[in-house]
Length: 155
Image (cartoon, rainbow, N blue to C red; front, side):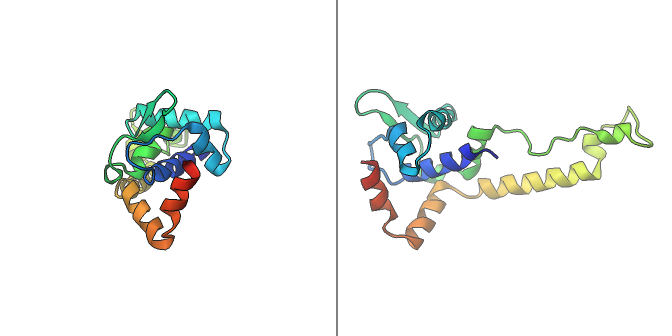
């Protein structure tokens, strides 16, 4: 996974604490973690295309969450940044090995491929089961001052 996933997740989490109706510029979000604004903006645009955040231009423009944090899963964010392809891509090397056959789809019959697919599905299920709201509540429980500190820093 690229660092853009981490950046996008933290930015989305920070947007959960922004006052309703307020937008935050890419520069402010980037400055929060000392990230390069241009690269972060690309991640934010991917989130816009996925319908996770909205973007408005102008003096009061910036980014805000497009949906309630309860309806944004970690998998939504990962998929927006990385795409939906599986982490493991079977190249069917068994076809070229001893006893390999051209009439067999090794992506379906290879035990290594099957194990990797199961792991990928488990990973995706875990990410799909966690929302931004879940992470937000966990952070607030562990560090109650975070929402106010975040709002003040992004203001």
